[in-house]
Length: 358
Figure 1 (cartoon, rainbow, N blue to C red):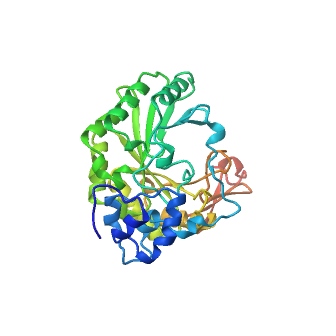
Figure 2 (figure 1 turned 135 degrees about the vertical axis):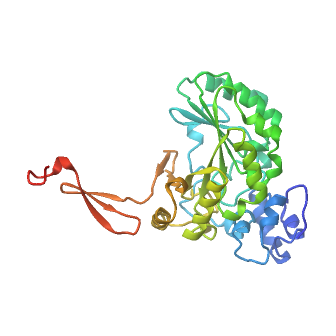
Figure 3 (figure 1 turned 90 degrees about the vertical axis):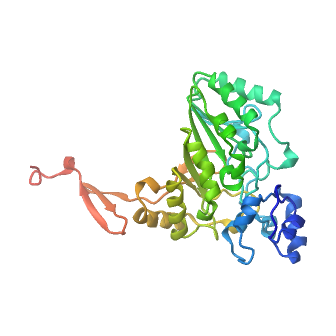
C-alpha cells in the first residue's frame, strides 16, 4: 500500500493504493458517482487490506450496498432543514444552535447522516455573506447559550478562518460555550497544528471539541498527540461515536474505545444509534442490542468512561437517551437491577409501614 500527501478521492485511487481489489472497481465507481469519497493517508495506514472485515475500512471504503434503498430511510434523518432559519444555522433546541461552517470533510464516513448535503459538489464552506447572516442570527437570538460548529467538518478550515469565527462569536455576550465537532484529530492529525489549536481558544467563552471516533485503532499515537495539543491549551474534549454493525457492536471493542478516550483525556459523551440515512442499512444494529451492550459496559467500565446511548428522533424532534432502564417502580418503592443483572428491592422511607419506621 502506498502513501500520499493528499486523500484518495476516487475508486481508482483506492485501488492504486492497495486499499481495494481491482475487481471491485466497477461497483465502487458507481458508489463514488453517488456519494463523496475521501480516505486520508492517516486512515489508509490504519487499514489492513488483508482483512475483508477490517473495521476501519468498513467505515470509509465505499460499499455497493450504499446504493440499496430501504423504505424507512430519510434523506434528512435528523430534520435539519425545517429548523434552519438562515443558511448554515440549525436551531432545534432553545439554548443552542448548529453553525454549519463547512460542506466538506477530510474523510467521508459511509454511514453519514448528512451524506446528501456534504461533499465537494456543495462548495467548501459558507460564503462571507452567508457567514455574516448566520452570525447576525446568533447575535439577534439571546436565548442561544451554546454554538456548535459542524458541517461537514469545520476543522478543514484554515487556522485563520477558524480564528475569525472564534473571535466573531466571542463578541456575542449571551453565547457562553463554543463546541466544535470534528474527526480531524484522528483522520488527519497533522492538521492540528499549534496555530489551529490556538485559533480555537476564545477570550470570553468555554471551548469544547467533540471528537468523532468509532474504533480504538483510530486513537493512534499521532491522533493522541493531536488531541493533547488541544487539551493542553485548556480545551475540553468529549467523544461521539456511532454504534455500527461490524465496527464496534461488541462489548470488548466499545470497552477498548472508551478506555482509549479517557486515557487521551477525552470524556466519553454520546454513543449514537445509527440514523436512517440512505444506503446505510448494512450498518444497523437493533436498539435492544445497543441496550444490552450498554448493560455490559456498566459492569466493565467506571462511570468516567460511560457514554450516553442516544437516538435522534426521526423528523427533527431532537436527541433522546435510549439506554437500558435499571429502575422499575413497585409497591412501596422500586426494583433496582445491578450491573450483573440481579434485582434488588429498594423501599422509600415515605412508603414504610409503622412497624418499619425507626
